[in-house]
Image 1 (cartoon, helix red, strand yellow):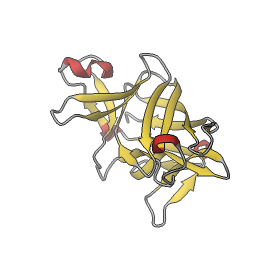
Image 2 (cartoon, one colour):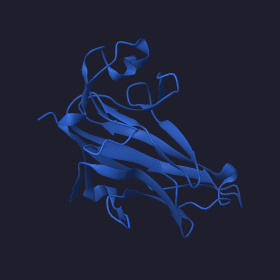
Image 3 (tube, helix red, strand yellow):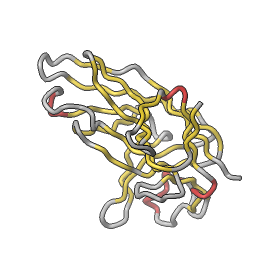
Image 4 (tube, helix red, strand yellow):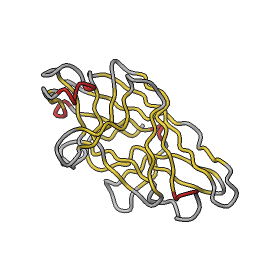
Length: 189
């Protein structure tokens, strides 16, 4: 089992080989990066990721104002894990509109999980929220890479089930990856 608690990883890295979409975890802590089987990786949010939910009602999806939330931020902090989403290895022209959708299908854990980015005015742009109905979808263009805030509302182990889907430009047929489970361990000690 590989345990990763800091540095850059693509927690969901979508690839396409031999007519099939697939998801791996791309470990970019070393050069060259390594593709890891999600079933054999634990991603860790260290206790230093703990922060307080802002009083702004726009952040209410994270919990009550002032309560603790564990946040892996969209901007890199060298002391924390920096997870992202990636379609960097996908070639343009293969999929309709060069688009691939990552579907967050199921969450198992002690409380809610959210993915969000910040708008230029500092307000949150919620991408995924385990507490308001699933699946939640994030669509990326091929050749893209993005970072977002990963927020966990309590310490504990979270499992996130994801797959990826797209339509082939050549035939219009839908291709979908096998679903994988991404595991996060959120620590408060």
